[in-house]
Length: 258
Image 1 (spheres, rainbow, N blue to C red):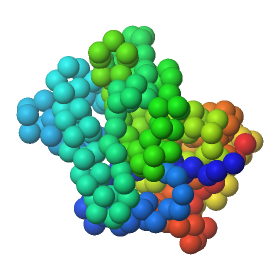
Image 2: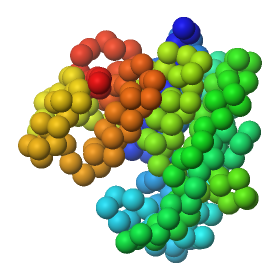
Image 3: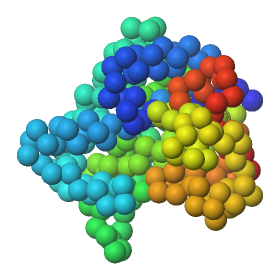
């Protein structure tokens, strides 16, 4: 089965021009078929502030009202996405920038209101792997921003980690898919104060132990839940760490397995 690499980039790397350029070079060097997924939350917060729109986060998740959705669409789907596509073209990677609405590729439901009304936030319902396959087969490299749609004309702000895992699950019908979650840390850390305390391997058993010990908490929880969901649904391998995981030159990264 042909291999497909799906890379999620986020956090401070998008903010730092040099780090972003270095990452895009590494991404371009990946052999074979690949997909890039990106967020851009900090840039969206900065832009919202310029427009006098206050960003509200609850448990690390953004409340997306109408004004915030407009800013997110401009920043994710425009500024960040097209900037990356242009840089990848300069590196001879034939990138094509997309949201989930393009080609009806990622359909979501608006998150139901329970204790918190998150506004225009989407939970992924369906990935059209055939639509994405058409692009990949034509030697395009899809670059997805963190926006999906509901099929009724409404765009939805959607977690980029979840988009990554759901695309990987969808594409695993056609490919041996591997996910690379790239961020500024070297991997999942045993001690948040020690940047070198990387846990190199996490499986479903050790995950329970790390949860019980309180080593994995906060923002790392949904990330790892996405990882295990992907592995249980046909994804071949998941890696987490800094951009060096794209070269696997050192073993300072975390590999997630069942």
